[in-house]
Length: 321
Length: 293
Image 1 (cartoon, rainbow over the protein chains, first blue to last red):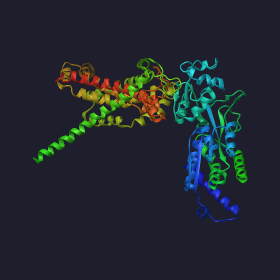
Image 2 (spheres, rainbow over the protein chains, first blue to last red):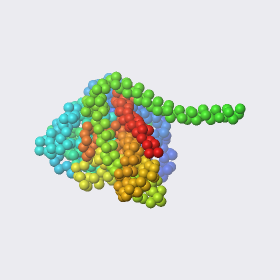
Image 3 (tube, rainbow over the protein chains, first blue to last red):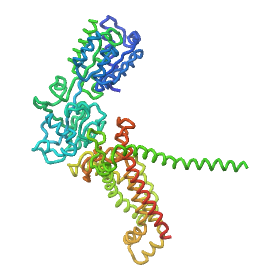
Image 4 (cartoon, rainbow over the protein chains, first blue to last red):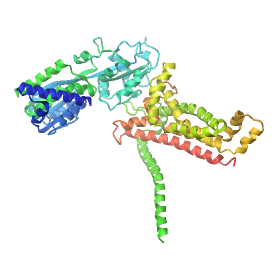
């Protein structure tokens, strides 16, 4: 509901602004009917991490432009780029920057593209507010806690650091079907999908919040957005990725100092697609509403100044043709 | 002639209606068996019964049902520890002490407890009972078997009290009168004569309550946690068989995979438990029935 309202307000504002800049000054209702209805197909494919955002944007866009058929696939970042480089898709979702090999494939087929940052995927490590001993955790310590070999072995806090209490550690984390789980296991345990299994696993982040917020001995990880909503019940743990302990905040996630548990996520738009009116309209729409959408689906929204740069970048790209 | 065909049609319809329940049961057992056999082709039954870890969804797969069984048994024991004394006291009070009019209104009211949706009990355990217990014992985890067990006990009080009261009510009046005639007090009559005389009925009520508690799903899924753990510590998160089945059924586990089949193996374990309990209660009922008639 909230997003829809925000979307409507933003859209209204966009429409009005466009009109004002064109010298028109009619009221909103009229402008909507005046706006040319677009038609065509937009094919999007790629990362499952970006999928929730793109799909949510596409849903909103369909409501505004029912004549445009937007399809969003989930082939993974690599699979998405493969199709993108063959010119099969207009837009590619990616949870990492394009690789050199993929760049070469695009060049070979005469496809140039623009890379747009749309949001951040940030993971938070949390403990109960009554936990007085954890000041920070290193990546090695996180691995020690969560790696498959820890199953049934690392059961107490003092096994992680000697000075910590000789009490049980109660772990809470996302279930195996979650993208957050894949991401965490990949960067912490070194292999996607590899972790211990003796913890409270739930796809429902509210269960995890409930669990760690009511358990003095609890430790959890989940999307940073869920922490933001439950700040008063949880204690955030700074993570030391080798360059000192960093607390995840909007800034440290956005500027990349909170590593390795944060990463920007991207969409890539091809030059051929940028010639199509419906794609340009879709991408502009995307960049307009992505901050509110990303928050809703559990990601860290992109700061306004960086977002403005993406809009500028895209406009220059479209102007080049 | 006409009435005879009518009669036949009605008879067949009734037979059909009755057979639907039996066919459903057979169907369920069939599906459970089919998937469980497929499961045990890949996992050894010895591992299933002796391994102390249950992590079928993770990288290191373990298929030991014991942690789930211990979770189920633990919550059930707590529930019975709550329901048996309270339920039995209520039954004795209603039968021996309470005025008739009170009994008439109180008993249906008590049975309302059984009509509260279990999801409501689950949230009651999580958001009321657990914080209350934590104010007494701060080290209690947010998800724990104690709170879930206590609330489950409250839920099954009507099973125990109602059925036990029925059993007490069925005892011939002569027995009670004889006891009073010997100069026994009400209390002596209640616990030395009536309760022992109704013991078979009381045991049956407890067994039915246990079988209800073992199969209970929502309360434990909400309040007891989702972490299979072989323990009898009531203060930590655990997972019961039913909660595991819920967890997997709602997740993204592909049909036909080994992970998917684990829920049938867990399901049949649960089924065996409740089936045995129901059989025992049926047997007790049959054996001790009419003893005093």
